[in-house]
Length: 299
Image (cartoon, rainbow, N blue to C red; front, side, top):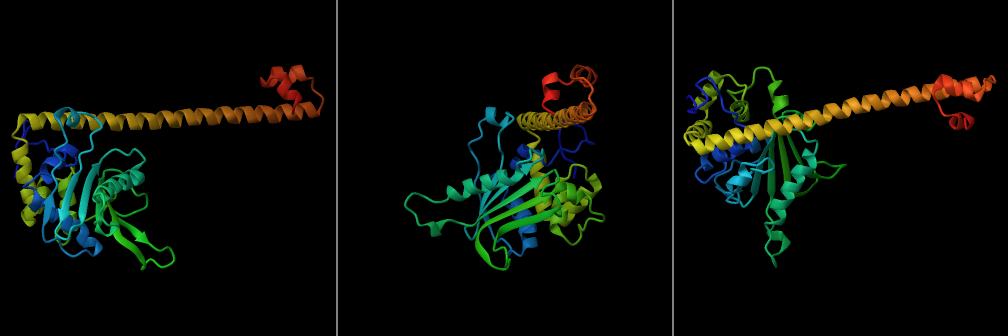
């Protein structure tokens, strides 16, 4: 199934573009593909299959917000048992994903209780984060965090909190991706822009939810306005990643230079201390080491 777009038949759109993800997985009518994806994620952590869900469509995205660089385009759904699921895609590592995810989880959780209601009415909230960088460090491609007792992990405080991370970097390292037996592998093939087109075709043929997602993508990208927003979001994401990388590289360079300067000063101080011990005049030590005379006197 070729994706219809203005970018040429060989171009594959980025499924982890947050706008595109939202349009394909997070609007009314997208329940079928979202149900398939969430069952693939939650089934791996022992959850019973989701029977049905309702997508809580986000209508608070005026065009100028979507076209901007700081909009958070997440997908929110309520499962048949009342559990809420919030899904977010993050492709740039801002080194805050742990607290960021907890913050977004807490907003969904706290806003679920109306004034005067009992705390027991609060639903379980599951956060699913698809990240295109190595987080959490040292984890596999799918990690899940809950509230458990340190000494006895079988003792769970509550089922209210559950946070998943799908680490695309770790997933790409896997050899012989198990697309024939594992539905989550099939979905991650679809979400990986670098997946060969023939493999994407294969997993779509194996999974009706992925097929539905591809069909919705075709429909979305027929719209010129959607194409424009998609491109703007891609540029914004690229700019953000560029800023993060630049700041990191600048920080490394500054840190290296700072370290070298400190090392040079410590070496000069040690030399000055030794010269002072053998009676070399202070002014000569200052001239040779570059240290201030007062600093040498205090050694």
